[in-house]
Length: 252
Image (cartoon, rainbow, N blue to C red):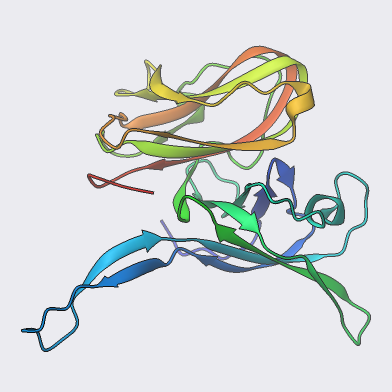
């Protein structure tokens, strides 16, 4: 794949699309602590991998629009976890990063030129930063239950038995509820749900919201992956990214 710019990107938080308000994604970081294990016979440090972490920081324009503006979404600084996601473009299979985080600040700055911007930082909680791929090209809209198939699948090139994680943002639902299910296939023709890789159903009153799910790091995910929706609804707007682990014993 050719080199890319950062044009046309999206940024989501808890099922809210802040792409039109965010001016810059300042930091996407997944540091890992190191544990000193140097013995007295060694003349250089010896270190083991320690706890994973994650940081997402961004700057937004001040937008006081009720309910959907960044001020309404961010200024409350909830003590509960938030899910922040960066979509690098809107192409199916493109790169995306997500973080289960605590929002630690909401800091407006009024510049001498009259500009008003807000700095927000998210610090990882329970899981480190995760890079994966988009299973939806930005926000996908389903008008009814939609099967997984070659028209909405991505090719991961090979089957792997190291499990995976996935993130879902649901922006809106009209109807009874929608359930988003990750499917896989060996031949990009016959798809089936991946065991235990289904998000909780979301009813209209539950949107916007975001979820993170994971399956065992020994579970098999076949070569092709796609998203299916089930339920009774006339409009479901959502975005999904998946992390298909590539090494054994992956821990987040």
